[in-house]
Amino acid sequence: MFPKDFLWGGATAANQFEGAYNIDGKGLSIQDIMPNGVRGPITEIPTKENLKLNGIDFYHRYVDDIKLLSEMGIKVFRMSIAWSRIFPNGNDQSPNEKGLQFYDNVFDELKKYGIEPMVTLSHYEPPLALCRKYDGWKSREMIEHYAKYCRVVFERYKGKVKYWLTFNEINVTVISPLLGGGIITPREQVTKQDLYQAAHHQLVASALVTKIAKEVDSKNEIGCMINAAANYPMTCHPDDMIQVMETQQEIDYFTHVHCFGEYPFFADRIYKKYNVSLKISEEDKTILKNTVDFISFSYYNSKTVAKDTSKYDLADGNLHRGLKNPYVSYSKYNYPIDPQGIRYVMNHMYSTFGKPLFVSENGLGTIDEVEVKDDGTIFVSDDERITFFNNHISEIGKVISEDKIPVFGYTAWGIIDLISAASAEVTKRYGMIYVDLQQDGSGTLERTPKKSFDWYKLIIETNGKSLTPLK
Ligand code: BG6
Image (cartoon, rainbow, N blue to C red; front, side):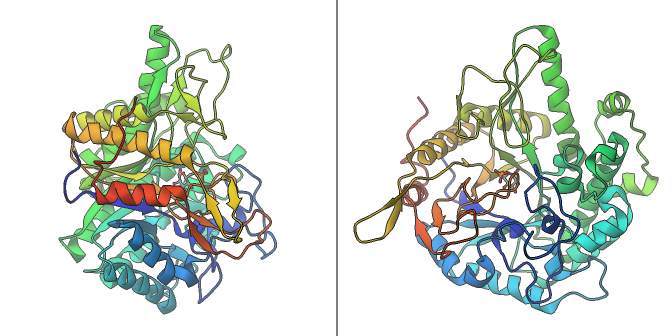
């Protein structure tokens, strides 16, 4: 069912995982003014007291963490490089050697166990100083600084890293100005014009570094990273179906540029709807022609839409939040749980864009029940998470074996518990490895495999044969 070289793995991001936010020359990133996550208020002055829970200390524990991941049998580890660890202010003359050395150590450690790294170059963590100077990606100047940083890491890690993702969930820029676009201006003052222009600068930057990556090493494989959702109509009323079409196109806008090297035919309609007039130069158009090798995406939930939403209940969701769909179940956080949606998304992506797919994020954020045994050790029986993964991965199996779509890997989000992006919580856990860290910052940070650890290990060992088909 799964190809024999299928890349099974886990995904993380530096700002939610590494900790050590100000160690060894690291500068602050935009995350350091978001102590409450994306959904909470930001802080003007980052101090230790108001920094959000600062990761789970992978920075100091990577040797043991990677060993534990290797015991699980993973083949690929998705991580991000913290840009501000390499260029603390974003525009420094030369890179921070200690930051570069840290990632060298991580890649060397992964190599020991034959684990392939997949590196996101920018996962919601551009340097704060740069974003303050330019109001983030609203300014074209960001492109050259990002390109410089990317060239440095491509050159440094040549031969160590083959898979790169340019921007995490690039389509989030038009939804979340600070998180996606590093835009410091308060969101109420940010216009759609600002957001689409910022997204354009990122799309040009993404294409430019795709070009640089290939120049540095023709073996590099570059992917885009899209925050995906299956979009459903609330009813079969044509108005609702048109709503689905438009919602989907606002996501496809980003994938299209990455795959075809130009804006899609429906872009003008989007600009008209939002009163946007994109400033795009001839040079930009040439740069955009550098297309990606594969599409990676995150999928957490489906989204149900309607033209008139007033009579329906709302559901929550990762970033795509819609109406309550009566045909799916819900997580403790009121996210729709919809494994068939991932199959739908993958078929849509492959039939529209025709590039190989990689599932770079999927997982269940929930509150784990921790059992303390008589000998004082702890255990987490996370059956709900196992069911979630089983059902989503078995649908991916169908995508491969029945729909015949090339899919080359899967990384479960937050494979080791980490800090949530939306709410800076650690109570909402995604991992197959429990971390003793509590919301008030207490805890030993000790790692303990959950029940899902052994479950995933078996899935990997049997290359998916031990999955139970979705009923
Ligand atoms: C994705 C992000 O959108 O969702 C991650 O790429 C994030 O950074 C993940 O952590 C899960 O969302 P949350 O808000 O529950 O952490």
